[in-house]
Length: 403
Ligand code: HEM
Image 1: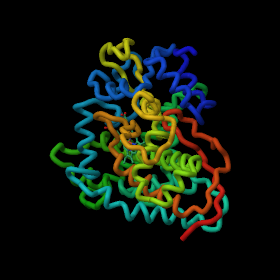
Image 2: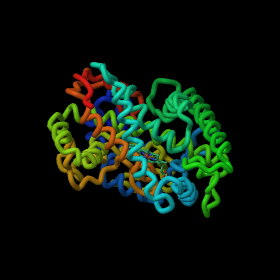
Image 3: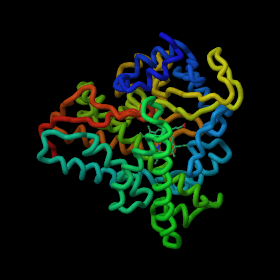
């Protein structure tokens, strides 16, 4: 099959439920140059090398054809060092080590309570939608608490997030210019809201991250207003759109592998390892579409031309048989599992410790408390995005809720 149409086929919604055969085809080609001039990479060792290569940029301004100017500066996920490092360090100060060790572990009780409350509310139902009833509200509540967003404002984030995610959806068909405009407007609205909220905390320190950003900026001097806005938007979007998919893909996989579900019910201590395997086997982030080569770079005997879009298909790398034994098999006890679920290199996921405990708690509570859960549709209906991939709905029949 033609390598130059692979991206079109991968992003075709018809292939969303099972893109893995196309990834196998991609790995056969090594690097696949597309007819629009971009390059796709899907093999483990090449992706790992590129994620650690300083000649590869995350800043789209380095593309030969840059994107339309965004209304707000891009966040640090789309910047290179040293700017990326400075902003990431400031953002990390109230989130994790070295300045805030224990911050995320301390949320264990609160996350368990939120999960418990969401499951309690399912009492009396024999049919649920795991996405709307559980997987979507859990991470949005957690990230809002962490940032310090008042509970009554949480619902405002869903519409903004959907529009922002739509902006990076490369699926052909719907008008990309219109999607970009809607995404830009939503980023601006969310950024203004979060910037104003941070301003209202100035001089009134509390234990949330927005308050820390304005009241305890640290030795690097903190964020200016636009940096704070774009970072807060990044944390909010990255902090929930991905975790929803991990929980939903996780439950879907466990229902497809009943032996694994039984094992985890019997031995919940295996859940952290099972979550790592889910991040390899059914990851929420399928590809990184924003890399660009700063100079011509040789990859698997192909020259990736300076300024061309370089798309790293992480989900393909994590199923590469040259790196993982029996990669298309879900094995919740797998050892030696250095997957790309959180990326790798300087941009490796900032929120990984939080995402891990959220998924571990969510799946532990769900496997323990849902009685005889059964998939109503397999495959379930998927969300549009080929980048952040996961079911839009996961209808389940259940026989009840355990205490
Ligand atoms: C299951 C959930 C999650 C997954 C699968 C995930 C995945 C990823 C991946 C693959 C990257 C690398 C992007 C790149 O190299 O361009 C990344 C970066 C990032 N993630 Fe996550 N993420 C998750 C949850 C979170 C959470 C909960 C937060 C925030 C609290 C978060 C914040 C970020 C940020 C800020 C970056 C940019 C890091 C940088 O550029 O240095 N993520 N994430």
